[in-house]
Image (tube, rainbow, N blue to C red; front, side):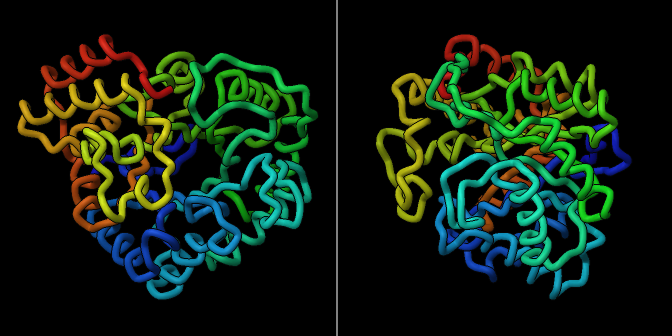
Length: 346
């Protein structure tokens, strides 16, 4: 397993990060424990979760994933061996978190960190991330990235960073990161932290995969100039790059079958691109999922690839990608397909 520095910290994180959002709905506590055991045995030292999980968001399952990780820590006594990342929910109308709209202000963040620490059965978080901005943005796909202004008040970045600074000073959080952010947002966080001597963002967790390489435009430069790398989520585009949904297939137990949340990847242009990627994998004697994950791993600006699995077979393939190097020929063909079908699911 390869390890990389998290931002400009002294923390080494595995190239493969264990994503956990299915634990508590699609996966049981026992299955979550099995996944963590296998991941650690194979060199993974980085887990990612959120107060929001499991997914899809529901009042009755909110926090279930953190509780499963916490019970694993309690059982194994190995908290110090894991780099643990979690997230505080951004602006939303989901009132079951704290009895009102979630915001990135002092009241919400302080309550959120205490809840996460309790569920995770730990007294510190290595990387505490803002799950999405307080600013009103269209950030979860369905558009071409064009900014649309919503005339809504938002919590100032200075205020959010000041609260995070107070939490860092208590020792409850070591470092901070962003998620689902834009180039303007990341730049502003970096500028404010430098100007006011506040905690510096070490990573951004955004979607990145063969169907959505939009991070390359604008965001990837921050790795080279500011040492802020990408924690890439959805490397398989919610499983669509495995090919299991091609030609209208809807496998039993799959995320789209259970929850109907795959619309972002169900477009004619996406289907055409997926077929090209699957054909390339077949021609190259590669498992399509392995190829898609290995592509993400190959990007210099990617600090860690957040893989997710509901079965052990899926997990084994995903972790195997961490030691799989794609040939220059395969990378060249992937880039060729991308030039023919650029970002069908931004």
